[in-house]
Length: 240
Figure 1 (spheres, rainbow, N blue to C red):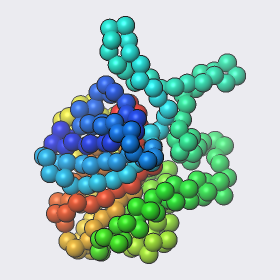
Figure 2 (figure 1 turned 90 degrees about the vertical axis):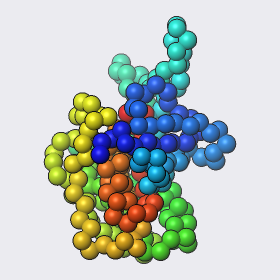
Figure 3 (figure 1 turned 180 degrees about the vertical axis):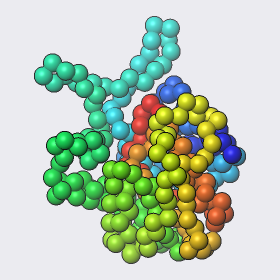
Figure 4 (figure 1 turned 135 degrees about the horizontal axis):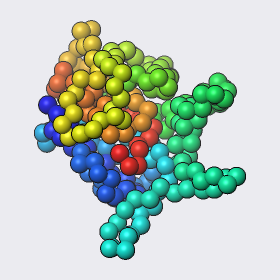
């Protein structure tokens, strides 16, 4: 099993082009009611997971080069003589939570950011509660602790059990993959010894990048219960 066994179909109001990730297929749908990205993950053409991403990490536009080829351009702005990439509304909040190490944001501000993210996921969670049984919330561990915090609050608010079953096997990051299409899945261990095949899993992560982490995790959950599971992620990288 390698990454190119997978296909992720992402439908959104605005989509990037020519991002050199053969796993992702973007579909633009201007009729969608918000900026959320509607996602489906297929393994060898079988649907194994569905999910929602709130928005892209950064603002972008589609331009055309002098040979009439379309390309994705990240928007920038100037501040005190320096050029910076422009983050989306949730992108800015997640950046502050993940990367402001030297001068971190106050805990109360961090909690308001997490609460706002959760408020958007709650509607989807309520739908799942009305239509599925034996829901279990799980998360992909991150040094940022963001997936843990989101999962913990979603579990408490919606009275859905939280299961800490995913752990990293290695410190190798998916960001360092040289050949995505032939990358083997071995980054995570998932302990399902205390789970039941009747469980339906709701997985939380912070950012979808190359898609390797989400593909690996959702496949292993599907391989266990042989049913479509679900995921919620605040952001998608534009160019991965």
